[in-house]
Every structure is written in structure tokens, then in C-alpha cells.
Length: 459
Image 1 (cartoon, rainbow, N blue to C red):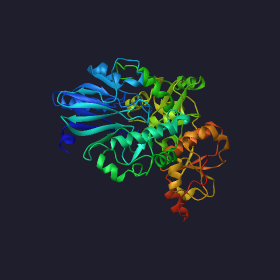
Image 2 (image 1 turned 135 degrees about the horizontal axis):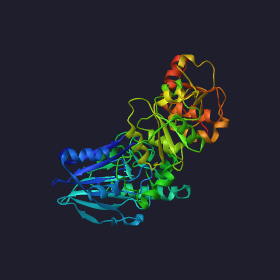
Image 3 (image 1 turned 135 degrees about the vertical axis):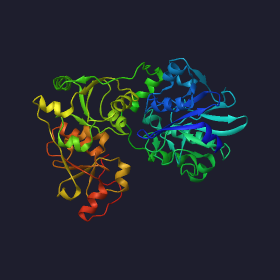
């Protein structure tokens, strides 16, 4: 634990469910592993310790965020370490299985662990001959393994078999070796999502159900059966990371736009994204706008529901952190940020535009309306309202016309449901209501018990 406490700094992105790591090498230099393009937390941690990032290592071509390695090369002069098999189109030190990098006292050894991606490496950190820990990226994660379907359904089983061999290889490390994954709780790259973020080889041998599979075929079946849907933007970020994200030379700002400019942008193919809390959106919003409340999961739903090719304009509430909007968008490659509505909804109504409203109701006021649950199928199966129809939020826009009229739309708390309601309103539904709460609140108010299973879920 001494090394963990003194030298390893986990940097957790709760929204994407990922961890980056900053390793203090003890001489004013640091190693960064799987850093995202949003480097605010990493820069703060480095500055606090007076560190310069000398090495930026990526375990794989990330699908869920843009790598910060190129930016660290620009900002700190960091040497970029990554798989030679990844075909990266920028200056880096390509590593193959067994290659070692002298970090100045510590050594980092590359271990080929394909499965999540073809070129995936794990990085074993050594102090002399002692194994301190292994950065497992999207290979072995806590009580699970990362998904193997990101390169297309025709590759899923092949990569799952590679993942089996990779995990078996990692379990040959000493039991005391720390396991430092990138993907963890809340990550759509996990299969299924785990709960803890770090572990050890010995603990995973005891607790990881995939490692308990008696043979390769069983492992493959279990892993593939656990795969749920994932955000649409995952399909394009791997290639952007291969080419290398653009360097950001200054903090991007949101331009102040008038109500008329916002109206014209929306009419000309842009998207109006309302980042205010769900209750604020319900009370009054720009017709046709998309509600994505600003929170940790903002980037996930922005990237899942909107293209990266159209300009975006934001409606904000007083006191919201504008830099959070910008960096969450930038870390998934959304850079066409036209600005924000100056003066918020007050400016919209002052300009003579009528706002739209959405009914936002508590569980005791839902009457006998159809109940549409927009959570992930795994959440729905774990416990849902009797008779509920499950349409995952990520796929709702494609089947909005088929959603029942006059529905109560619900999720776990209300944020995703308000996003769903805004999608349905854009598709022409005018009688949508959103549950302020979740299935437990509804069941309690109606004297019902939640039911389990996937019946009612759309394919």
C-alpha cells in the first residue's frame, strides 16, 4: 500500500466510469496512463506535486473518450507510449509484447492483452523485479472484463476468445500485484459494468465470475450474453484517436448569442441543447430543444443522441459551470459549439417567443397512463413497474413514432426521462409526462411490487 499511497494518483471520471492514473516517479516527473482530453484534474494533481508529465501511455485506442496523450506531448513534452500495432498517425514510441521502458527507477513492461481491441496492451509497473501493479485498461477489470463488440458483431466472438486468453495471462502474475483498470463502474465499455475501480490479481481470482468460467467456451458465452447497448459515438472515436486529436491551445469559450441567433441556428440545422435541471426544462423551454441536464453523464448522452457534425447551442441556468459543458463536449470530439443563449429563457420570452412546457409529475399523480421506462435493459430487468414498456433512451429517437400516446416517461430519477420526453416532443408527441422519481417511488405510491425480468423490453 505504500506505493499506492505515495506515488499513484487515480483520476476518476465518474460520468464515463473511467479511471486515468498519474504516477509520481519521485524526481519531479510523472507517468500518465489513459488520460482523457479533459486534463483539468490531471493538471491540478500534477501542479499540486510540482510534476511534469514525462510519459503519456495509452493501453488502447479508446472508443469512449479522446486521448489526452497528444495534448500532454504538447503541454509537457511527454513521450507518448502506445502499441506499435495501433497504427497511430502521430509521433509516439511504439511498443510490442515484452518491450520495457525505463522510467528512471521504475520500469514499465508492455503485455499484449488483445480482446477489447486488437492492439490492446497492459502495462506492468516494476520496481526492480518486483511487480507493483498492472494497468489493465480494457482487459481485466474489477469483477468483469471489457466488452469485445466495439469492432463489429462479426468480430465479437473472436475478440472474446482473445480476451479469455488475455485474462488468463494476467492471472499468471503474482497474487499481490495491484490491478489498475481504466474502465469501471458506470463505463459502457465494461461487460457487465462493475462496481469497484481497483483490485489485485489474487482478489480477482477469487471474485471475478468470468475468471471462474470452467473453459473458454463458457467464458465467451457469459461475456457475450452480458453485452448491452453502447453510445453511438463509440463507433467513431477509435479512428480519431488513431489519427490523433487536435491540440487545444486555449480554453474554449461559449459565445453569447441572442434569442434571434439561437432561433436561426435551430432553424438552419443546429441543435439547441438545454442543460438546465429537469424541473427547469419542464417549466419552460425552447420548442424542439433537447434536454440533457448538466451532470457527470452529460457527455454520454450528448454523444449518444446528437451528431458531431452540426452546430450546438446551449441553454443554461445561472451558476452552471460553462467550462464543464465545453470540456465534456470536447473530450468526446464535439467541437462545433456555437455558443449559449445570453440571458437564458428570460431572454427567449423577452424576445416574444413562447416557451413550451412538459408535465413533470410525482408518482401519486400518474393516474392510469402508459408507463415507458427508458433505462438500460439490464436496469429494467433488475426491477420495474408492472406493465411497463422498456425503450432504452439511446434508441428512442428511432422508434419515437411507436411510443404510446399519453405516456408517463420514467427512468431512475428523472433526468433521462426528461431527455426522452424532449425527444418525443420533437417527434410530435404533445401529451408526454415525466415522472419525478423512479420505479420504486411509483410502485410505492400505487401499492405495487416491482417485477424482474426483461418482459416488456424492446429488442
